[in-house]
Image (tube, rainbow, N blue to C red; front, top):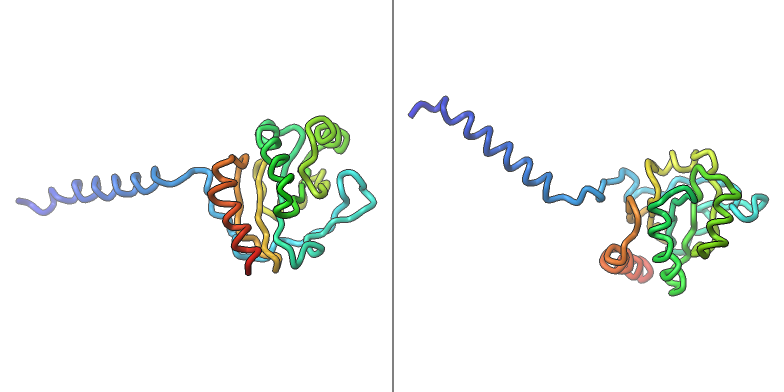
Length: 176
């Protein structure tokens, strides 16, 4: 047999293997270059009280969650009831980052649908979101006591993600 005839077969097998690996991955799990790195620092006003500032530095020593959301975001409204229920467990502080929103619209949404956040910072121009690599909302980060990002979820948190990924991670981080 001519070895040159095997080249297309080898290329086909290589292509099938490459596609199989790609199809077996979760498209929601986009690796973030920020995982394992310090959370970008910022200082911006809070949504409800613009004169009060929020900075991730103030959360050092605590495991906390940063949830990027907006009132105009349909997926955020899907996720919102789960965040409300999770906040009732008082497992950790949930800090909202209201992203590219109108302050009045965001406040109306929280008054109408409930407020799961310990506080929300207001990122009306999206500058903080850029530093965090936000390219869609909702996005959620779990940040450890040292201020290092340990997990990022793109899209709405589901009960499965909360139970299987986020809650065990929080428990682990709280023990360290």
